[in-house]
Length: 394
Image (cartoon, rainbow, N blue to C red):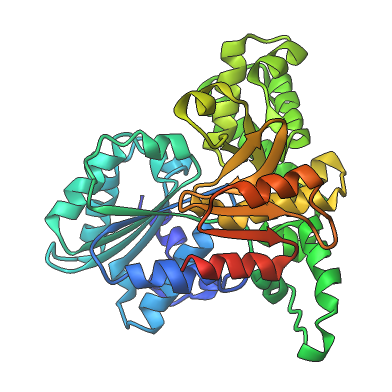
């Protein structure tokens, strides 16, 4: 195991090259960095290759060069490595301590990628937490496995979902600077951003093969292999149907009929695509019964992935998907009343309708928009409007 750990932690031998990440994310400064100094276990969730590992490496770099933490006190390891199969987290940490001659009283910083590949990870993290002097940052690309926790870390942990790059981060990754006098250029660049999305590596390389490989890895490795699904072709067809329905309501039963599978299988596949952060479901606003019987709307994890598979350039639909991703933490629902639909109504009663640029509300939409009681009402037409909505809830 020693050789494997040294490969994961080159800074033990003074090699810091692998700590060079694509770019610094906003999430690092605003969410992760403030939580490096407390005792809570930090879970990073989100789509595969969305930047969770990069955030970990930014944290390690900060600890080494800003906090002057000794390299031997920092361990990074990816628990989906087959060379570590059968090793528990406690065994790895104990071996790490012995290898560097570390006392149990010395503080450790543990960065554990893909934590849910380890059986009973929650119990093991609790044991490490209870011993003390251990800061744990863990990641997972599976929402369901993290949700399946038994409550052992209740009050001891905090979870952050890492989302695709926002528009400002996209400009930074592309090294695009727009002067005040050239603000008209935002329209061009924002459309390019909506088209390509915010998957960090794809933004930099523009390599279509990267997106194909990413989605194949999720479908084959994170869904089919983990859950024992043999109908790979059906699973891929299901995925394509989800991309086509992005921004629209979805019927589990209709998809089942189209693909010739059972309703149970259709529901299972839908849940698995949600669990791997490929799609997000949005329920209808209303009484509990209305929420349960009404179809869910779905949104894709990234506008670039959606566009790659649908080939669509419906700017209104793509922009609506973008708005959802930027505001999803507001616990959004959609409004549907007398066949009229409005896009989003948040948990704290903020009403949002998406109309890209000069799109207009229909007369009936305007009537419903005006009639509904809300703390605040917004019509989002561009990225600045979305920033205004975000700032209004801070």
